[in-house]
Image 1 (cartoon, one colour):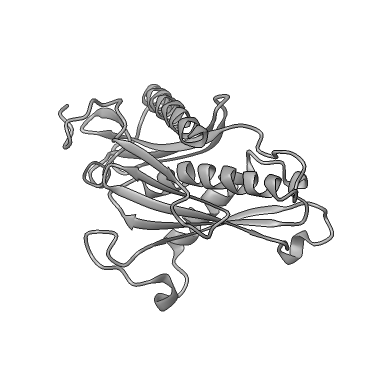
Image 2 (image 1 turned 45 degrees about the vertical axis):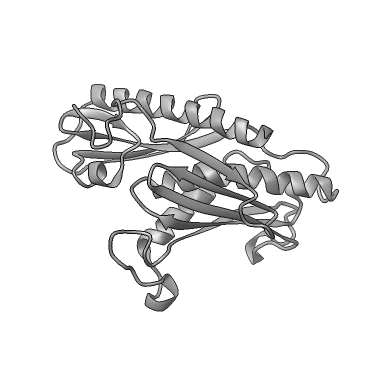
Length: 238
């Protein structure tokens, strides 16, 4: 099938990762995936949530929000409308994903908060947040090591996330909003560099999908994640 932007079914949107975008944060990354732009900042605090006190372990958490005109219509700020279920679900996903690849005891009793804000949203904001959050987290860890707050890098391995879906009977990688809005299946894949799954979120919005189709979508997701991990490495080496 011909995609709205002319990409192949297995092709990512153009991706750019800009480190240090937020001057005063311990780590930050602006990710641009097509028309989805997410800014992720990492903040290091010398404290942990109450339930972690006395454990000797650190914590990594996330917050997610969309700016009022990041999308096609203006949405209210979360602070003005109370708790937003979608935002809470996404930020929990981001936090779980980051904690899956970090040795929390090596942080000591410190918290790293990853603030993920959508500047422009055209599909895949949660997966773009995770991919950028890894870069911001890596720079925050480098900052902590430079300041001798920790002795070693607690990140176990690389990771990234990507969306896949079934649109018009075809498996597609990295859905934009127009594709996502008419997908028969919508799926988000979070995976480590070693090829292990951190989380798979898949829902049939229309027709149910088969085991064979699931396998093809997961393979497509793996391809996208591995490409993103190489882009992360290139950004962090720069």
